[in-house]
Length: 143
Image (cartoon, rainbow, N blue to C red; front, side):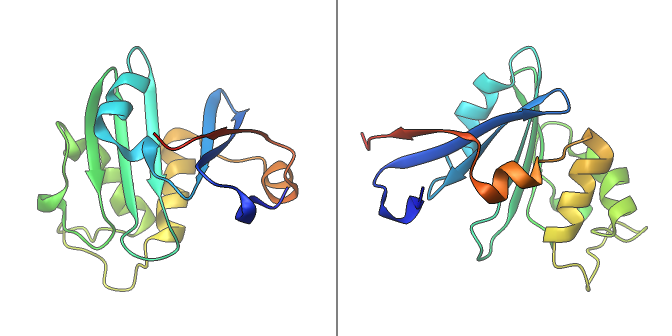
């Protein structure tokens, strides 16, 4: 289906590697901290917001708490969340942060965030299903 004709919020849904995922089209409901807190109760939730234009944003929640959130290009001291230091080693490993905690000047963020999601959380998406549109989808009318 060509989602460009759709009106309202659309999410494509699936599972992979023990995680459930939602790919949102033209919305960022998953990045809402209140929703993220609810979705993560009793489990973990990861959000990568990439609308194709800056800012990109990454959020990690666990058991109803936003543990860490950041925009690529920030320094370790500027990370948000209740325990942002938990992601610092992973951010260094993928090259978003230098050893001294400053932002890596050559990192654009997209590849590094995807690498961190894969290495730190074991996240991957089913490429064929994403590219060829075989995921279940839901459409929500605007409120």
